[in-house]
Amino acid sequence: MTAGRLAVVLLSGGLDSTTVAAMARAEGYRLLALTIDYNQRHRIELAHAARVAAALGAERHIVLPLDLRGFGGSALTADIDVPKTGVEPGIPVTYVPARNTIFLSVALGWAEAAGARDLFIGVNALDYSGYPDCRPEFIAAFEAMANTATKAGVEGAQFRIHTPLAAMTKADIVAAAVSVGAPMDLTWSCYDPTPAGRPCGACDSCRLRAKGFAEAGVPDPAL
Amino acid sequence: MTAGRLAVVLLSGGLDSTTVAAMARAEGYRLLALTIDYNQRHRIELAHAARVAAALGAERHIVLPLDLRGFGGSALTADIDVPKTGVEPGIPVTYVPARNTIFLSVALGWAEAAGARDLFIGVNALDYSGYPDCRPEFIAAFEAMANTATKAGVEGAQFRIHTPLAAMTKADIVAAAVSVGAPMDLTWSCYDPTPAGRPCGACDSCRLRAKGFAEAGVPDPAL
Image (cartoon, rainbow over all chains, first blue to last red; front, side, top):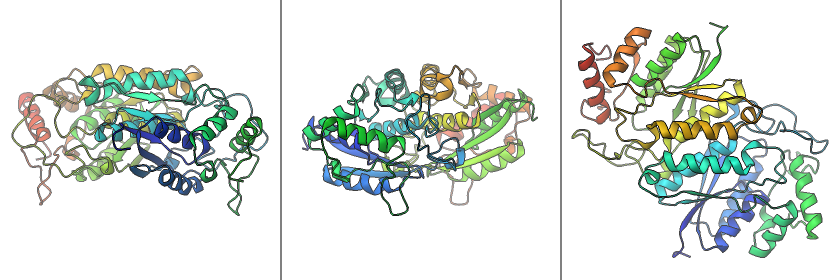
């Protein structure tokens, strides 16, 4: 694996980012896995990210503490109830202001320092739950910005933001995960785990995951 | 002051960001001051930022820990000597990969959560020491990205990145600081303080500061 190029992969420990990391590995990239500990309600995903990074043979896994709770504004970081009544139209309260911008910026910093030019993020434009920072136009704008922001970019390098899940349904993602051998059994998706540490089964993330496995005709190995 | 609009100001505690914050206040903005504790060598500037925020009547001051040392790649965060032999051409080793991208992204997150649309940053294109993320083309690319990244942007708000120092010499900045009553006596610029906690007088930042005060014909009130 040491012959491949380095890539920084944003790894939350969920199904999507785990699939993306496994896809990057399958393409021959050496993985630098980056997990942001933003004091999310669903902190359990941090432990899952570490297991996934180890299972995928990441060269390094950094869990970066970055406490966004002081800013407020999201059900994922503030004391706002996570919706349980199904996926609603519009941008949901679980949106964290500028989250993917912040995460990709930090990933860009590590990439530049490590000599990596490739960043992977598991955003998805179909089942994207209404988050603006999952759309292709955001990714394109970030990539353009990254190439003016950095010493490497000024010197002619091109940073590339890979979003292999962009056009996939959740069922497609499950199928892709199977095909690249992503360790789906180690992943965590729920935004609002029960006191016993089990998925709630009712939040948007649980609903999208269950729908994806059902449509792919694959049992969820994490359940 | 409560009638004005909110602005997030990136405040390092240095001369430039302090001047920018004072300029924003003079324009009638209510200040949300954001200082990033990135485990910089010159951590003394954090205490200066707190004093400046208080002196300028900021409504809130957040010091956000964000440890970029794990990434390496800069004399400001890693164990690389800070140059002392004068300002050299090219991008210096004190460049922190993607620093302003990361800082502005975090500022954007706070701005969106707080309902602010204006961000202020003390970048400077003339005395910019060769940092790519201080150039106007970077700021323009970031602004474009911010307006696709956010719920507020998608809903029609326009984020604006204010860089009032962009075209100023250091002498111009000193003159501007005098005219808006910036608390220059509370600021800190040195990248590599002496063990006694005094400016080294030899790093790029000390040299640029001294040159600015000399050319403006103003004594440095912090010395």
